[in-house]
Image (cartoon, rainbow, N blue to C red; front, top):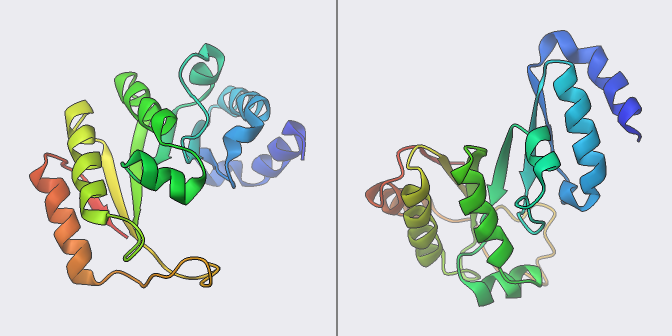
Length: 184
């Protein structure tokens, strides 16, 4: 689709929305398209949010920053090696994006998927929530239950986290100073 194609689709629902969220895959792999679409959407008086895994830098690109309103950022693992095992790259850019976006009030939320038997979930939530609370304790922190729908279970051996586990992890984030923690 072109930017114009997307704008035509938006026009059909414009009376019912206040903005758009661009997601993916990883939408920032098409950064120029994202920037052009966000600029066009803002000219319509709508907001433009980005849903990102954080692997592409937001810092250092003023045009991008001026085009977007907020970012919903995945922090898949706070541990560099664990993140690399999971995604194929370390988390340096993700954590820099987190700090940068929080510093300019464009970080809407961070999200961590809780994956039993694969990730060190307690450490990830502990470290991510400490970092987030230090940046801005009012930024949303979503803890997302892993669900094996559409997952290649021959590659990822996990289970759905229990409600008790999710409550324990939420309590860690709250104890660390996060004021808006959600479990989904």
